[in-house]
Length: 399
Image (cartoon, rainbow, N blue to C red; front, side):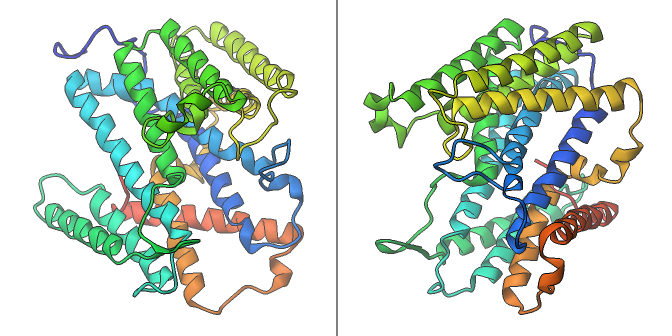
């Protein structure tokens, strides 16, 4: 480790990317693109979709986003340790966390307002959506170092984003409104969660007992909010609060803890941890069901705990296959989703905007039932294939 780094951060033996984490991320994003395309289908099984806001259950789609948050946590210790080994100071690390979080918040802010875009705006919604995505690429593209043109493209991207914000008009019960934070969108929720957990990890020096304490605090906060114990603080909620009532950071922190056990180098200890932790959280999630419904939309503690257990089990299986047994050939097909994740996530926004601008639609016969599910899966693979081509042209986003 470099001399000016902080040696009190819990070390990991991994100074570079782990195939298991990238593979888990790629598989999760593949499934995310797949389920996000369900809106184009008809007559698909209800258990594959999202459960309703008032339902006490969760569908397959309700497990995908929490798994992604868990993966964010898996990456935190390794990423921070890697930057420390390269000589980054704590101040520089803090700025890196702030910058990445801000970028995700900005993108999430624009995405969440996309849903309320008004037809009365001077620019059509599909065009606004495409230009917003283009501006994201211009600002956060992984430009080659030592070139002068990236600065001008980034400035142009910022100017375009400001222009798009200025002309925005949204619809509401009170008429036309400007952009509002609302629930921040998927990327925004990831940004807030990463910001909180990243700084918790830094401030606690990555010490495992304190990560457990943080996880328990987030779960307690989530439970207290759901039970109404924090209602007296409702006036603060609009200004200062923990995203998802603590549910989102809890999922990320569970990933941090899992990596700390995995990076210990003692595989036997990790398998014991993974089995006990996964079983305990799933059992606990069902045990508290009488007090908390299982609901993704309401971000209940039962949903959080069950999703933590599922994510731990999935990662353990993937780690065994890829890292221990060395069988990673299956991952190569979807690798772009694991290393160019943000690029993969944003491309469908361009696709959906193009669909809105045209009348061309696939026949219902290929958008119904199991055939439709297969069609959407091929679409997800197509997006990943396009990202693979873009990577060859050095076009990928990097935060």
